[in-house]
Image (cartoon, rainbow, N blue to C red; front, side, top):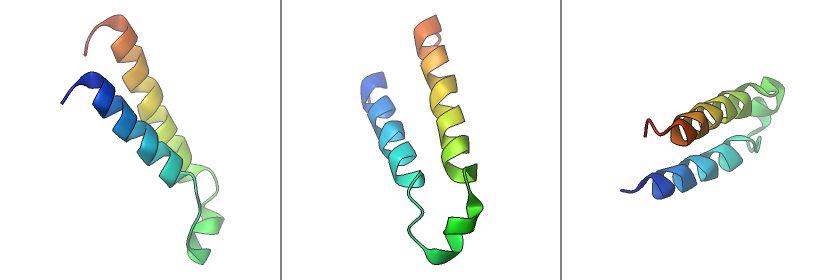
Length: 52
């Protein structure tokens, strides 16, 4: 699995995590998408620094 494929998978998870599908998850606010966004930012920084 290449780094670009992993990045694409994480990006898809971020997009899916940002959509509140179930009624009980609408009250969660930005929590799930914020956490996934933070993971994506950390991954991008590591990718740019050449650590991945």
